[in-house]
Length: 374
Image 1 (cartoon, one colour):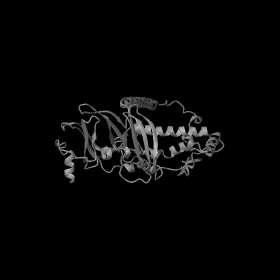
Image 2 (cartoon, helix red, strand yellow):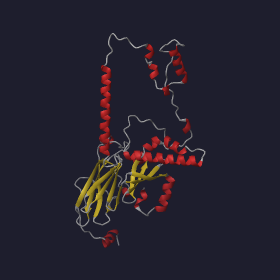
Image 3 (cartoon, helix red, strand yellow):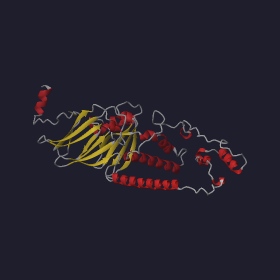
Image 4 (cartoon, one colour):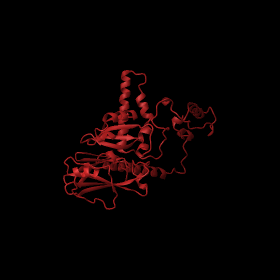
């Protein structure tokens, strides 16, 4: 019996349905069924001919992806073949293979937007409609925009008050008959240099000038910025996760809310280990905090890549090097797994996952469930 005859022996065609009109190509690696068996979720992908520049200007967006796509999700009713609802993600990157970037738990759908570093949560209603009820990424709570708008208004009001004070000060002119203040009350320009940029010898020289020991001269001492060492002494010989030393960002926007929660969780975890080391009187109790401070610039660049539901409210998120997300090979394969509670928007735990750990998990769980791809 041939393959076609064997297939026809077990299955028969019920209906054929055209779902797309020049909107892309259906992904053969993606299909999800609801628990009640009424709907199937399929996806169509269309390549973007030209990389849009505005896709990188969104707060939290990645700049390392070579190409972007337009992904369309369709909810199809199995009984009739009708398309009940659809959602379009333009100029984005979503991992559809093996459902790594999209996961369905009962009637709750989670979609990972890799380009914009967001998680979109949808509820599939009884009529097949997709209702988005939460986004996790740049903002996490539904009222975050109201809070940020109120904070921005307070900043603008403060800046206006400061501007009025400066204008009032600049408009004040001393009378011509008024004598200038004594020279002793004038503050030397050199004294306005921050103290952390002045050496002890320079402070002594300045005091001697004011006391009259040394004739005052504007060139009697100079302030020079200290040369920063290439490697901080307390971190010498300490393991660094990145390939090169971190660079100081210039004009960087505030971190997205999800990334702030991740970094804050790692810091509190390192602080808890530090306090535990102090209580145990270990030789190097500051090791966890030093690891966090040294690798902060690297941890800050980790990108959200995959997700999976553990129950109705808890998501398992995978963060890794952006080079891995972009399809390039990373030798270290450094990965962090986070258990994230979507309802309360807080982290429950984390785990560092390296190559050897993933290999062991693959050998133990391979073939058990599709979620092994995490």
